Image (tube, rainbow, N blue to C red; front, side, top):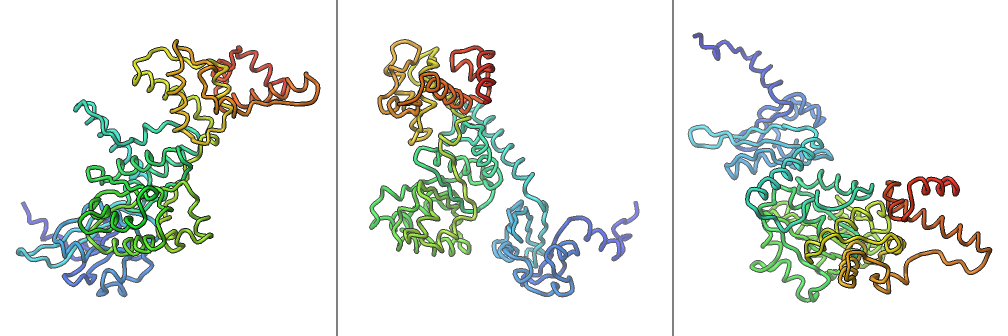
Length: 431
């Protein structure tokens, strides 16, 4: 057999190097560029002749090629934030006779979107397979287990699938009871840190004089205990201004240190408004809000009401050893008409209380807590003809039912009428 390697001319090798990978770079032991292909230069908007001989950090933003040589370990499929987007890169030290003489880097995904979706799907599937065979379930929330198909919830879920594999800080904002903690847990579970610690610190319940120690103490501080994992700072707006300054400093230094902790922030207050009133530091706000997730309140996602109600009833049945629990249609109308200031958490606690107040399997209006029953927004007219009052009330009830049950068959069932009757009424009122 011929020595086919010897047949490769310099011209052929150059073609292979230019086409074997989409983008790649080779550096020497001083991290100066020895070779970079034309496509990468085109993306970086530099001329190859100008890039050759330059320190790689002066040509490629956020590169870690020099760090790979310092560690002496390959960095495979690592997220690399460059020119406004995340990509996947391989970085490998080059070793000759036991000595590191340089490093080779290649970009293996130029568009992270499809990879993130695939990664999140594969990760969730493998976790469920592991749980099935082990007979145990992780106590952290899976994204797929968060109930809701309304546009607002779908938007949040899609964003989480995109950003979970990255190191970006995330702000999760939402009213009390919207489930911010569950969304934070799902981000951690879909990340490559899921086998590392997930720690939480509620900034609203710790004394402010102890907050700095809780966070930054070298032995007991949460940012160090969560190294290589994720730290969730709940109700971050409650931190005192001096502690916010220390947090900002840590975030800046963390990029260059080996602590490597990912920070997630949640708040039931609008941080932008708190910045305008001086309660929250503007520089910290802009430092952490690169990814902003707004969890919609229950009153703005009533399309999910029937899903949530069924899920919670089933969950309560399992917890209490009950079977066949049903919500009376009249009862359901009252629940739909309530504003739910405590959101999903309040709905669950209300249904649980109703089950305790019910001897049989049918949850009636008698089991509704008084504050919910009296605060429901059922129309009460004080003047006008009886016919007009009844018509206005009927319109409001129909609109509420359709908001809670987009499926008209379910809406008719909840109202205790036939589907044909429902269609007649919708036609009558042009709904």
